[in-house]
Image (cartoon, rainbow, N blue to C red; front, side):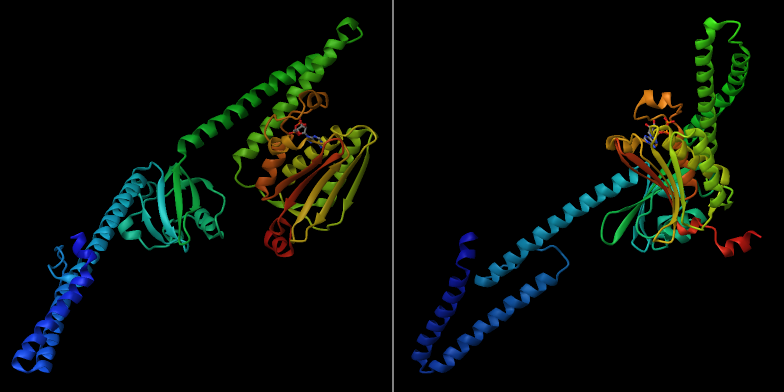
Length: 439
Ligand code: ADP
């Protein structure tokens, strides 16, 4: 066969030449050379047309037949096409197998997986997605996600452009006890994935952890108050030899009381999804913070306040005060005597506003910055304890800012000082229509 393929053209041309020679001889014998040659050529064209017709029929046939038996180039052509078709078929089979394996794997996932277009129209979903979201592939194929998922929170999340941060603790449609997390993942130019996970157990554990911390803190409050009360009653003059120890016990009990208060504040903040918002008067907030800074510093630092923005915030006054005051307290505590602490409230170019606290204190080495807002994370344990820190201040700041849709930026240089900036969007500023709305 290979030999035939190689010599396909020689065979075809050879045949034609042979036919013409025979025609020539016959033509000479009968003295009709032109007619004999024309007849031979016509015969050759007829044979070629017949081969073309067989090739066309074979190509059009839906059945998988072997290529038609033919001669010369026609046979070679048919076998080349046949080879390509076989290659395509086996590639297709492999792709189908692969696709099936992927679909089966995706279908077997315990997490819900929904493939959507960029316009968030459903293309495919697995069994877990059907179970968790109450969807049905047959009915919902082509439907827009935000229309089939009947939850304002999910709809607002899906309406965000691009790929928003994962959404957590969403009640499953039809079953409030089932808590879900949702995450949008881009995976091709035309499609994206929505991954839905059942996080009920995680949320339950998280709730138990929160309750546990809150309960323990609450239970510790009373014994600590009693201890502190008795320590206060101990008369240093009667037992002077105990005086240093009693002082230390008093200091430590105060520190424990402060840790308990901070833990309770954190638990309360964690339990909230949003704050009861009112108008936060920033002018009086800054005045209070300055008074607090002065009282804590006791003249050891210069405290400056710069209020360039007339704007007020929308939020919970008490929580925002707690966050700002933590930053101011830290600035004073981590700045040696003679240093400067500056508070500022400014508008930002993007329409929002920011509250910043700068100091000329010890600063924070860059490797600590990513973890500095974690609970009980300290750069230096001894310094934090010496200055009366609980290790919870910045965690509280972060939670309060999250609840106010703000973010915390920290710039610091060891030995030169730090600047903590709380950024707020324009939407978080108090505006006239809101005032009318509130009234
Ligand atoms: P703490 O109660 O220990 O101050 P925080 O959560 O408020 O806890 O702060 C965490 C750590 O961040 C502190 O232990 C301290 O090392 C560092 N830190 C916070 N603010 C400043 C600051 N203004 N200057 C230098 N270090 C700071």
